[in-house]
Amino acid sequence: QGSSPAKPSGNRPQARAMSDASGSDADDARPGRGKIVQRQKRELKELHQRQEKEGNKLTSFAKAKRENNKIAVRAEKRDFEEKFRLLEEELLKKHAEELASYAPEDAPVETPSAQELLVQLQQAAVLGGAEADEADGNQKSRAQMKKERNAEIGKALRDGAN
Image 1 (cartoon, rainbow, N blue to C red):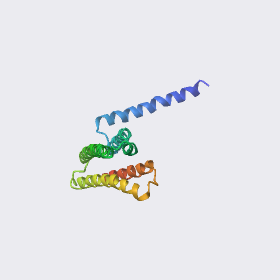
Image 2: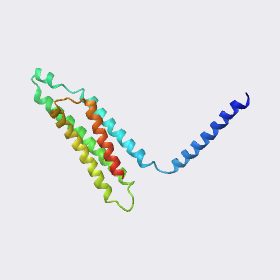
Image 3: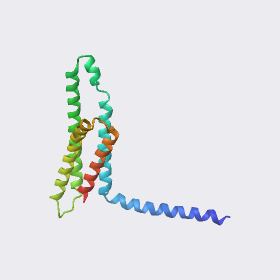
Image 4: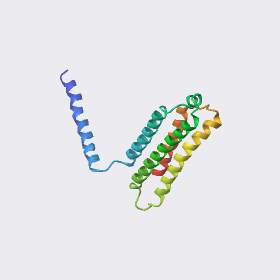
């Protein structure tokens, strides 16, 4: 009975030592491209969540109609959307620069075109999402639209990495 508990406890320090050794190697090197892409996707998702949260605070069109204040509310919404569009463009530009630093030395020309593709895809997703809402008659839920947009972004990032 005494030897049984000793074996599992003996294995644990070895496992920790192995993970510690690999962790110390990772500390010396910069994070991998995959980790950078994950962080970038998380930052973009957080920006979209913040936009949605702040967008809910805006006056609804129905209330604006009742108060005969439609023009001001629509202008406020346009300003709000423009603000977040600019924030998203800045974030995407920063991400493109970060990913460009991971580009192979042989082909620096290819990476910016991939990043431009990503920016175009983002813009198309934002514009396409609005058109799809009108075309589908709001049949798709917002969550589904968001999931599809995030999938397109992830695919573009992976294509840009290859």
